[in-house]
Image 1 (cartoon, rainbow, N blue to C red):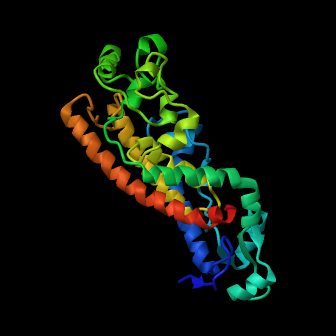
Image 2: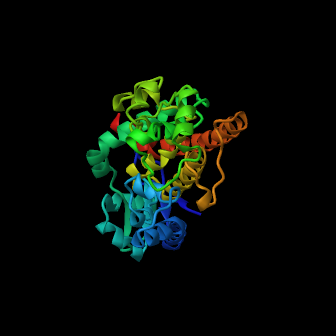
Image 3: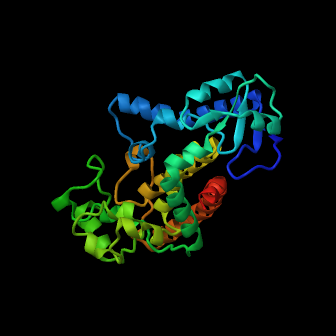
Length: 316
């Protein structure tokens, strides 16, 4: 079990991990990440695409190698010879003599921790923005009536504008896809989905979204807002524990699968059955699964908020 350290100021070292403890966690993290990263790299090298499993590596900016690098999070001391390597990693520093004494670490043994002072000096805007997004999204009521129509809006009037995933056939064809859009209310609240709408679909959305509106509109029922927990987790790295990063990644991967099942695309060649949101049964299935993801995301959102709370508090 990790050894507790006496109370200290916000973002100061609070937990000590012995070398065998944190190396085991780092190995487990690398193996967990490799299950997703290695197939993606193999496909990329072979110039092949996968409409579900590639998304977290192509849409988001964290590289496969970076995903596999474990961090303990803010305030956690890593001790042992292997910890010395981290002094060459960004935002790590050696413990001071006073911190060593408080932590009870053996003199002469390498001991490193997140350099919270430097991290906050360089990442203040990121920490503040993520804290606002996380807290604001958690406070708002969840909405479950969108039925994933953002993906359909990206394919609206495809014969005129083309579609984002040109290698995927439309399950209902161009005319059928357009008809679904025209027979439904489009109520997307997520700007990063809205910005990919075709030009003719933009005015059909109930809200004309802008980037500036994001912090005021993100809501916990939105699939993409819940996928973005992965984005906030890696943008806050290395202040977020690797296990939490991977929990967010894996949730985002499962959400992406459902998102594409409910899309206008035919993914039968990849082994995915459709969620037919143009039908009452499909809508019911979509909402049920959307509610399940929202519950999972709420717990991860709380964990992310807690992980950065000392850092956010230090900013005032």
